[in-house]
Image 1 (cartoon, one colour):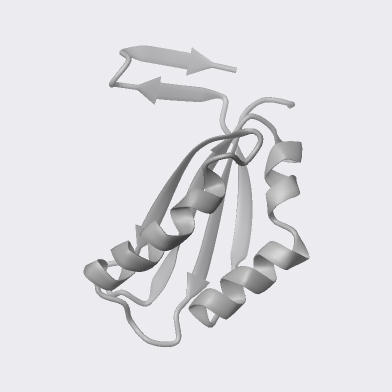
Image 2 (image 1 turned 45 degrees about the vertical axis):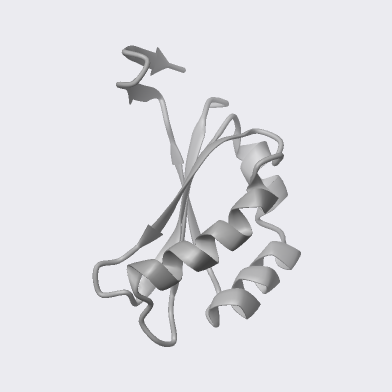
Length: 106
């Protein structure tokens, strides 16, 4: 399938973050993703215990996603958060978009 891809990147933190700490860090890195080719949307996420963080990314294609997750990106995440990221790719054949009241089908 050559449709949209959801990538889930997670990393285990060396010490827990509060939501306020995570928000501050995430806001600092968010601009680097604004002009990323093929990226439709990114959600920054933090586990309730503050020990796992990451991002959920919606991409136009697997190729677009793979263009971000380079060795340099992995090094940036590892340096920023103290842990290497794990990335899982999932096909995204249907999206329910409630704000626009649309169901998007690839």
